Length: 260
Length: 374
Image (cartoon, rainbow over all chains, first blue to last red):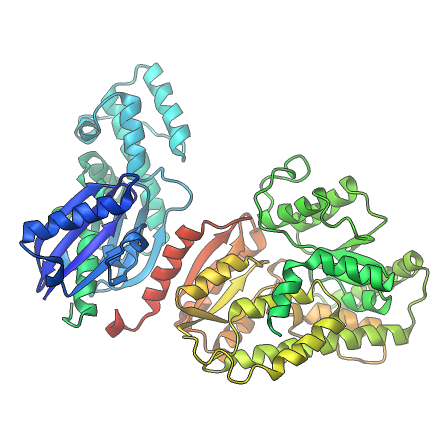
């Protein structure tokens, strides 16, 4: 049985097609102002890669903050449940799933089936999320991809107190004025983000193993800070940004009657 | 008929103005449900609760602390914007500092002919609370008599008690129907019913409840009940939020709110001394957390409500910066968990981020689903 999961995030739309539990194709697009077009394009590409037509799909489930924007979806699944279900399917030992995307950070405590037992989501502030690194890379005048590797070179921990993207940027400017090496600032940024996410996750009981999914899991600097601050290993599945879409596809399969 | 409650809620000021015109009577704006409305009804004064409008505003900043709760700031904003310009008096019963500053700031900055601060004891569990409150109610009664120029007799007080008790008993009956497998009204409709009662004359309100009750049989039979939820917390008349929760596939079946069950849950038991009977009712009512100490009596009450109304989960809401409620939340969460009732905690502001809250509510409802439906 072929099903699709579509994750309409704040920055990217991700599409995953699954056939009898196996991932057969994936695709993503930047979410522009023309949201419906981005969704359609990503969906079309994923179908082409899989050599399938729309009619071949038994069920399509949408997730993500824009999940209601998918006109051809059969139903919806919250991003909280989707990330947990996808992550536990890929990393069966995971009981705490942290999902950090462009605008939101979430932490879920789950059971062995990937069903959410409790969860927390960041509120009114994106200081622990991906758009924060974008703003900080801009302040450091480096490409976004470099901020992670750069921070790994740092040997020094500098605390940052600001809890808001805008004020954090002014702290970074102060550090720049003090001629602080770029790698130390990069690490300070990732440490601050990790501590925001962890303090939120601590509202749950953090049961191991901990899995990290979402776009930020591709940032090695953030992952390193998260491991260090948590003092635990953090497991990351392949292509972590597709995990919620994969979770939605698994839900699609079980809703269509194919079991999970 | 049930729609009438929402109509009153939305046109609260028009109702009060018309009442005034029709009767020539005085209207008293009050800030907290510990205000003994019996005495006001005995004096033929119409009590209306001052509530916010859930609109973003920029008028209160110089008049009240920014870290005081959004509700008390929203209330004050209504006064500063002149929306309560028909009030003849304002009053408060001591409950928390935040709402008290809304009252004192109103007194200072918005001209109103009469104002009264009633020192309702916070330590209601003390044996001295009752005699103290009886004394304070006597003083308050005298003050109202001077203000209106009319003596309040024991018969008047008994009449005031009857008006309030009848209304409470009817709201109780109305709530009873929500225990059914298919509640005949939504949580939103129940909220409109209770809150509108804080704004209009009890006789009008009671009559409408009676008429509504006749229409409840088989009502909402086609509506999907979804998850049965309880809602617990501070002042909450955020109707947009309540509607969103129920639209996600849930029904709010009961609450512990001062815009809900806490307002009417117990009646005055006549004992020959009307003021003492009234005082006893307010000392013994289901408590607001600012008054619920040393023993925390809210928890057994909340658990019995959850059980009686068969709630599968609870939404815990509080106004941002509300310390009394925030202090109670961990204990409530734990107590509910021990009864296998999961809860979702949310913080209310003047307006709520409906999209973000919707994700949380949907995820919470998914959490409550049976394993095989997941």
